[in-house]
Length: 361
Image 1: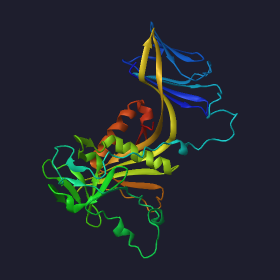
Image 2: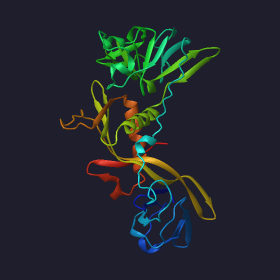
Image 3: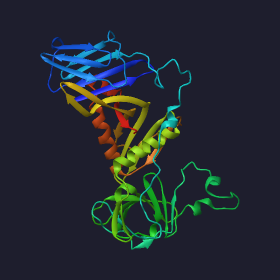
Image 4: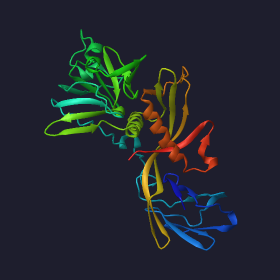
């Protein structure tokens, strides 16, 4: 057995099971027996028990059995439990949106220590050694000025959000710096490229500043010893963006867009289940033909990738656009494709969207 995926829906008291076998099998070779705490799979003379932790199965509830090529799929029902979800003992359903723990830690830039910014790919140096005197979180694009400043009267807020030479303002996946400290780069319209390896490291921003992608740069910190600190990585930034959206929205869609000079790239993501429990073979432990599964929580999403400029309908008020680096889009798309492999052909797509998971733990 190569892949095991079990979607848990305690509110509905049901589970959907997808098993991907090592070789093709036929329906007449498969027998499935449900026990209260496990699924017993008999294929020919091979017997395998799949243990479902913290779940009580209704033994007579097997339904929708399908055996196609290497896939075995079916549904089963579970008994009521005293867990938070799915129990009639609780009349109030907890708002799952509040359960997302968004990690707010940022790169380890040591204030007032020597720092050099380098290309992540080729280590090309982009600035002289400098001391960042102000390292501040950049406000959300929907921010209220009163949240950052004491007074809203007679203040040019736009200019205050333009960094000075020794300022670094950071967002969840980017940094805003003064363009005058940057060198060893090329400009291609708005794109900022490393002049050695041509990696797209950022964009020209407003007010004599650059927006630099965290996953495209490293920081060389000089304290008692020289440390090269990776600012971030593309997959981490992709998941951070998704978590940030989910923590502030109960529905809608996410659009990650990269507008390069000659080509546009985008991913559209539509969350379906905000917090879906699944069991997988992630940490499979086999003992006498018994398999113990790993339990985790994911966002189940619809997604699609495109290379034409994304044009939103005028009535699409619940879509959130994020301008990101191409490496974030590539990492996110590859990550989603891996999760889509957990579904058989008939379950992979809805219209022109693929179905996938994003781990939120």
